[in-house]
Image (cartoon, rainbow, N blue to C red; front, top):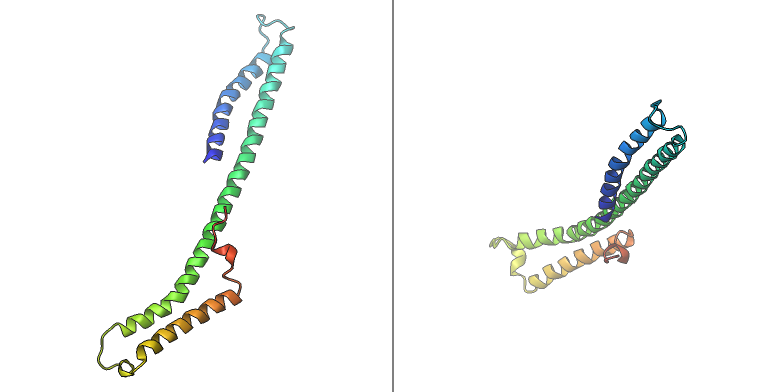
Length: 152
C-alpha cells in the first residue's frame, strides 16, 4: 500500500534529521574557541530548521496514520457488507438444503413420495420458502442494491 511506503520514507527521513538536530544543538551550546561567535547564528538557524523538519515529519506521519486508519475502516466496512450478503444467501439456502437432504435419503417409508405431484409440491414449497425469506430480508432493509453491488 502506498500509504505504508510513504510512512516508511518519513521514518527514514526522521532517522536522518534527528542526528542533525543533535549535532546542531551541540554546536549551538558549545563554548569552543574554534567556533566563531558570528557563525553561532547560522548554527542556531540550522538547529531551528532541523527542529521544524522533524516537527513537519511527525505531522505528516500523523496524517498518513489517519489516512491508513480510514482506509482500513473502509475495507472493514466493505468486508462487513459482503459478509452480510453471504449470510443472507446462506440463510435462504440452508432450509432448502435441509429439505433436499431429507428427500434425497431414498427411504421407502416416505408416503409423500408416492403422491402423483409430490415432486412439484416439494419444489413449490422450496420456492415458496426461498421467496418468503427473500421478501423478509428485503422488507427489513437488510438486502439493498448497494449492499451487493461492487462499489469502487
